[in-house]
Image 1 (tube, rainbow, N blue to C red):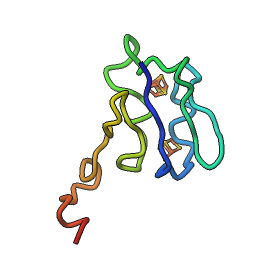
Image 2: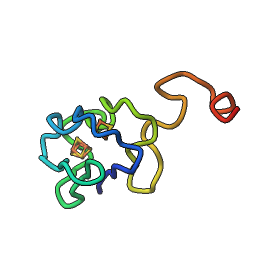
Image 3: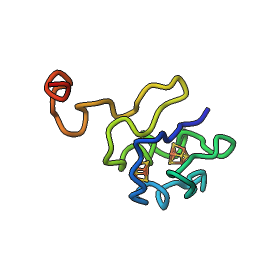
Image 4: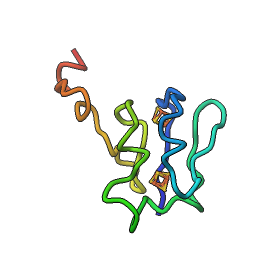
Length: 84
Ligand code: SF4
Ligand code: SF4
């Protein structure tokens, strides 16, 4: 049970201090989540704290590889317009 940070991460540092499990660490080329430490914030918070603050849509995936903040979820820009 762990989330994953992918290459679209812009290394903004916002998520790292919010992780109670100390699962997020700076790496190259982008921040990563230690899967052995990530609890998905279960029991501590209603939502994963890293994904709640991450400003980049799609940078954090759930265990199934699905974006926690999918395209359009933060900007409100419809996906069709992004593609245009
Ligand atoms: S889901 Fe919670 S425990 Fe997992 S990396 Fe994000 S903040 Fe840390
Ligand atoms: S908040 Fe998002 S963009 Fe910022 S470092 Fe964390 S994963 Fe990367």
